[in-house]
Amino acid sequence: MASIVLKKSFARFFEMIGEYVRLIGEVAHAAVRRPPSWDLVREQLYHIGVMSVGVVAITGFTTGIVLAAQSFYQLGEKGLAGVTGVLVAKAMITELGPILTAFMVTGRVGSSMCAEIGSMKVTEQIDALRSMAIHPHRYLIAPRFIAGSIMIPLLTLFSAVMGIVGGYLISIYFFHMSTGNYFHPIPLHVSVFDLATCLIKSTIFGVLLITVCCYKGMKTTGGAAGVGKATTQSVVTSYVLILIFDLFLTMGLNMIYKQIKMGWMNG
Image (cartoon, rainbow, N blue to C red; front, side, top):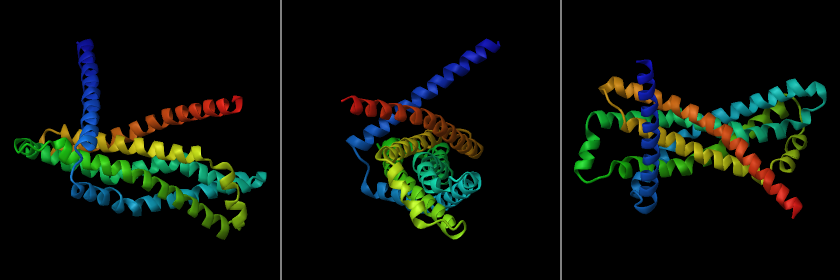
């Protein structure tokens, strides 16, 4: 009996993966071949991007302050306080900026997307769209997909800048570090690869959180209770996938960069 249940669980798991991958393909096709109207995209650009600026700014700013403070407290006695600016910049650009921005947007935007689409699903509004020859993926998901792919990388860069500014302010006004000691090492140690890593990660995280939350919304059943359950699942699933993809992206991108550098040196 237990083996049968386990087999059914595995079958359902792989079925969900197939449905999710198919949804990504259909949404990407709709976004490229038959783009949704500009009005729908503009509304999502505002909802995902502009309305998230405040929470992203606070998150990045406070994270930069904490990073700078920890750097001073842990490294100052060892004479390494001068690496504070580089430490904050590197961490915010390559890791904390993309992850924290994706988390904040998932909590603020992704959950509302899932709840909105899930409510439409259980009240049969999505079936009504199909009856009017309006494809739900093109009308509901594609505008969010396009807007998320654009705005989440921009929000991530903004979060990284706010983190660097936060680290600078506490370093200068609390720990009495000079402006030159904070900023001068950053251009020497923060490379184009770091910025590329930031943009690649944030774009993939944006696609993940948008599509996962919309997928969970499209699969919602069971009335109001089902909407709440789907919303919770969408946020948790997005968080887990973001962390898993961050691991593989970090390893993969650094391995590729290392091979490229070796090729340049050998060439």
